[in-house]
Image (tube, rainbow, N blue to C red; front, side, top):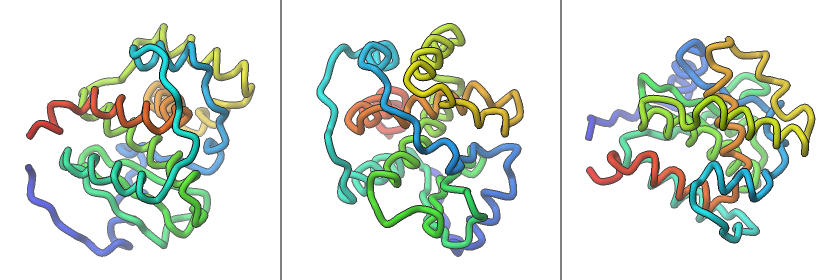
Length: 193
């Protein structure tokens, strides 16, 4: 496990969101994506049918954060993020940032941001994207049927980030149990350390 440091939250926020070229940033424009249909969930997960968890709690968020941190990723809550920034993942530093000043005091939207950023951790664990382009494209098509503008904000990113950001938006729409299972699958080697 790499050595851990605890920089001040404001310096962590500055370090993370000022390096957007290497950072996957989650803005408030993408947080309202609808839940995905079960067929796509089954494709994404490769697990078959499961029952989603109906409510997200602070305890569930804390448990998932602990799991994420066992992979060597640190998590910070910053209260000085720019307006509209909800979270970020910095691959080089292995840091997740949650923007407390832009998130409501409600576990449901916090979970969406954490699930989104955890997808970037999963991509880091694998060393590549989670889905082949054809499967990602079909998943995006299905999500667009439910919500036509689901991926409209991808144009805010460099074209090289579209695949990873689209995957994160698909993951954030999954039920919490499936996000955790997906994380355990893609980060298994880091969880076993």
